[in-house]
Length: 280
Length: 274
Picture 1 (tube, rainbow over the protein chains, first blue to last red):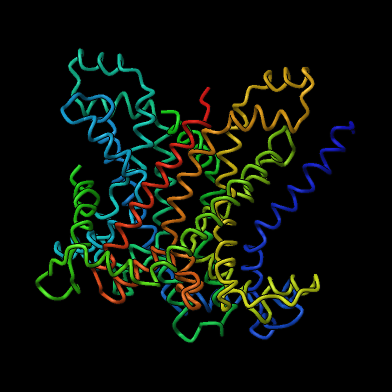
Picture 2: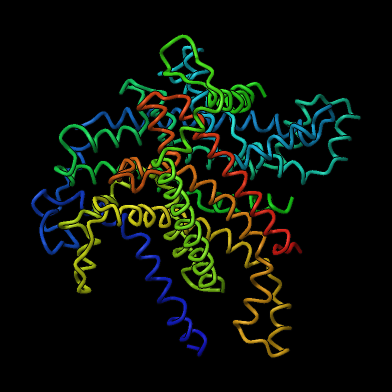
């Protein structure tokens, strides 16, 4: 072992391992608390591994509330939104980067501004718009109201800006339509941005809580976050059935942790892409 | 374009209009009251408290996230075994639903047997009341917020550090600059665009924080964690005071634009693009 490697163990690996453990510890605590009995979870001092793991807790929690329904809602709504956002952002970004029309500068400025303004400000009026359209408490309302995101347009715009204008011009001269240029030149060239966008949007929407909770009333439509939260508050579970709550939390985050482990390269890439944003 | 107009541009303008009216959602007519909502806000002590909590929350979440993110990135920024594993573990909180992890954290902050107090007692402290205690609740929420976002900031800094030219650092080392001097005079200026970008995005995120507050404290105890956004939510969807809610939203937007402009002003002098 060289000297630098030994010093690395103390100056890098040791602090990093500690930090990583600390960061991951709540997850460990969640899963192991889900395996404890109610008595053991209130025991002092706490046990770091349950004395006899109660695997049945997971099944019991799964059956205590319609979690399969919540998760299916989340996955379905999030997928639909991700697909629509991709199409939408691609078209918007195409118009902003490779088409010439009046007010283009103004539109770009508006979108840049939108990136800075908290979208919460639009919640109330959006709510009223949805209620006028009679789309409150429907899947359609949830999907429609989320189908555009300033961030997505931004991300794809950044990617399209990198594609040389000549390539697009060449397409025009060959007589290709806007749709064809978009579909067969731009999108294939910026595949990775689209992959990133789909993943990020899916994760965001799966986790979404505030807005879906506002616009849906019926329990059948609840997404996973809202479902988990009502399980936490209602059903006498508040502070009484901690093991079940922990078990339920564990399985609601599992799909995302799995997705993240499988696609982390792509997700981390989003940083490379959006870090380019500020370089304009 | 249509959805953008329908759910973004029109609502924003409409929110502005609503802030000049008095309305309870139900009645058919909106009463135009001019600046009355703003005048009421200016007289409302709860508003100032929420403003204060919002500023505390913003500072308390943005600064530690930036510093922690940069610190972790510096530790990871060399050819290191297992760095992929470290990075994954540190980043993973960002991926998970805030509601789920906030529930876990409210168990950790449980005053009697929660992990946080057990650890504190191990070090000889009495522990704290955490989420039930007005002077601790905000700190509890800030811990969760920073825990969730620090890995995300770290990944941005990793990319930025990788783009710092090695030969520049080596040249400075030959000229006799110590590692601290190299860091402050070369690395910090070169990664300043990332710091700038993260600052703005984190400020916006902290102004929009809702999920963890809703799960952990609902703005309490005694308003100690009620941010402007939470006040907005409560007056709009619990008290149905649309006018007041909209004026809070407008204040929020103006504050956000002001903060962004301030960051731009600071950045003009301090951000270096290469």
